[in-house]
Length: 89
Figure 1 (cartoon, one colour):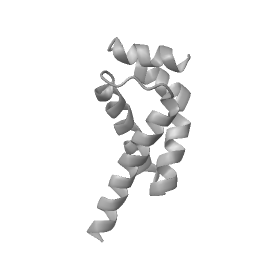
Figure 2 (cartoon, helix red, strand yellow):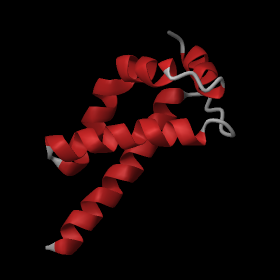
Figure 3 (cartoon, one colour):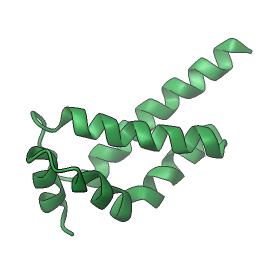
Figure 4 (cartoon, one colour):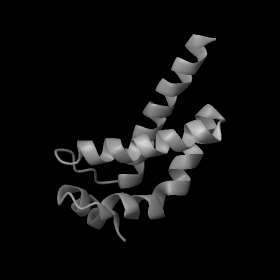
């Protein structure tokens, strides 16, 4: 499925948007999170938070390049988790 179709599903509030995002970008997002956190469970949680963040931010945002948009969300969420974990030590 093309990015604009997936974004359209988010705008239509169709839950299939998350499934399609996971199919197309799940491994990419997992890799982004794992490169920052080096922890499988935390990485999976960040990817799930990315799906929720995408769901909550579209609309009003309508990203042109979905991979970049999702990667940025994942990176921001992962860095926040990393900082929180290291602050506790």
